[in-house]
Image (tube, rainbow, N blue to C red; front, side):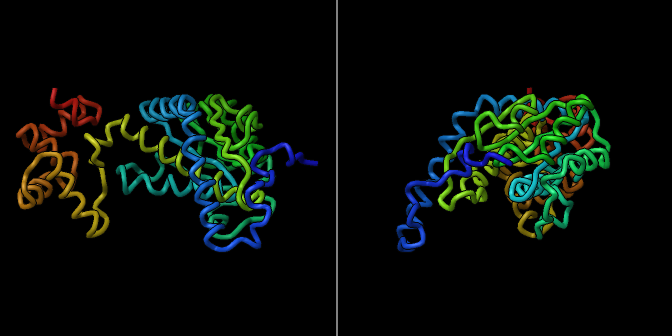
Length: 297
């Protein structure tokens, strides 16, 4: 028997005991008030998030990967963060990987019992060829998901650094990981529905980890995403805007240099700032480990 009553994510919220009779306005206001607690809960675990970010940067610098693992909402959030990295930061799809209990089909339709498997997570990691250079982040709102715990245990045996993200104190996921990020957001408006505050908290933390880690490996200049991929017309315009903002050139110049830079925003900015050709820009960036700012020193 699983003791859910001890978990804050499973307890009843005294503010919503009469949720079914609330007016829509009252229900929405209450949800909004509860959601406002999430950033404060995250603020308390910033030191743990910082350790996780440093671990991700170290993994990337060794040529390793960031691997998210979770079930249900938690797994979907990991997959979501992973698939948004290539267009935003120009990373190859295999650099940030999202694994969800039950496989890709579980993203759109629940796979019953998958999260309770103590072998599926290990098999998923073996299938992608887990190495000691990788970092594995297990995500579980309850903090007790067997799929995640077993995967973290296996990752540690392989020699990976591990992180556990949950929304309950002293969670099994936290105990299984090297770094425990436990964001205690309290009882949900709808009892046990961790797609609400807990899901919001996990999404915010994943945003913080991946974005800050990408900053750490040179994917950002100032506050501009300089490795953005031009995969549609909106992003083509954004790429030009980024060059213009970073270098103060006009749009025609941005377009012209971007063409010479093989479509790379980072190369184009470096070429303009250093007044150099493409080959020189590439060489400078290699020496600077991809950081534009370091090429200017």
